[in-house]
Image (cartoon, rainbow, N blue to C red):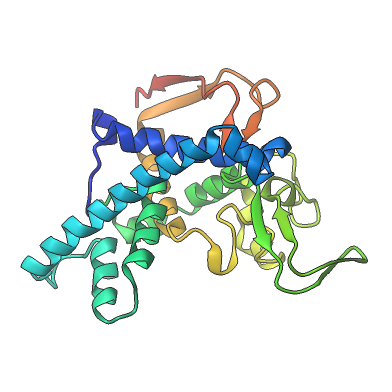
Length: 272
C-alpha cells in the first residue's frame, strides 16, 4: 500500500488492537449458537464492541486513502518506479473503475493481512522449487482459514442430497486437504504432494488455503513470495526444532487457525 503502520514499534496500537477485536468478535458470533439471533447478539454487548472496532479500522483505512490521494494529486507518479498497490487503485478510480468504498475494502483486506512493500528478485524466487513445495504443504496441513462461508445462488447436489439455493454452505479446507482422494499421504507432512505431476492429477479446488473463485485472497501471490524470502533466509542461518508434537499442540479453529500452545521452538545458529 506504500504505508508503514509501524505496528511492531508500538505505534497505531488502537488500530492493531481493533483488528484483533474484529477477528475475535466475528469468530465468537460464528461459533457460539446463542449469539446467532440478532437480539441476543446485541444484548451480549459484543455488537457494540464490534461496531466500535470496525469504526476504528475503517476510519484508519479512510485516513490512509485520503493522505495517499492528496499526495497522489500533488506529485505525479514516477513511471520508472514500481507503484504501491494503493497508487494503482487510485489510478483506477481516476478512470471511474472504482469508488472510494471499493478502495477502502481493498485497503482493509491488505491491512488485515499486514504486508510491507519491499523489493523482490522474482527470478531468484522462481528457482526455489522445493521451498515452494514445503510452504504449500504447510498450508495444506495448516490452512490459515479453517472455514469458508458461501451463500448458494443455485441448488447444489451433494452425495445424492439437494442443498437449496439461499443456504449458507460451509467449506472446510482442513478436511478437504486431508482427503486421500486428492493427497496420497494426507496425514503426513509430504511436500511431494506438490510435484507438477501430482498437481495436474487433482482438481484446482482440492487445495484452497486462500479460498477460491472470485472471492479468493487478493494478496496470496505476494504472501507466497514473502514467505519464500523469509524461509530461505532463516533456514540458511538457523536450525529449527519443535519442542511439541502436533498432538500436544493442536490447532484452534478460530477466525484464523492458531496453535493452542503458541509456537515453542529451539533455534540454533548454523556454524557453516
